Amino acid sequence: KIINTAEEHGNHAVASRDIRAGERIMHTNPDIMGPRLYEPQPCCLGCHASNKRLLCCQKCDLPVCSAKCTASTFHQMECSLLSKYKSNLPEDKSLPLSC
Picture (tube, rainbow, N blue to C red):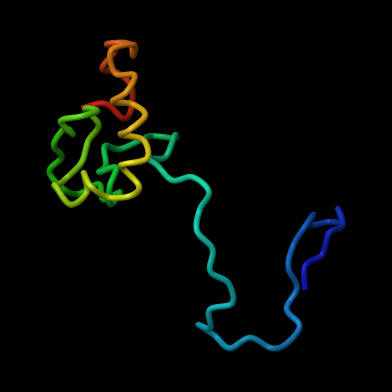
């Protein structure tokens, strides 16, 4: 059950039955995903792995680790926007996502 009051914990969910250890009780997709802002590490913007050799996407110049990740849904959403406006973006390579 969902509690919509601003008590001690704010909005939260409360179990209506006992839950077994390891039981999945909820699955949601994130609204947004990307590298962390605090002490960011270079990572693939297709699979989000940070321990792989990264290449620059030929369309948007963002880091990816493979052709599969270049074509991934996660990367294609930002790639299509950035490649469209690539000529208007600053040349500053200190941006955390640039190659």
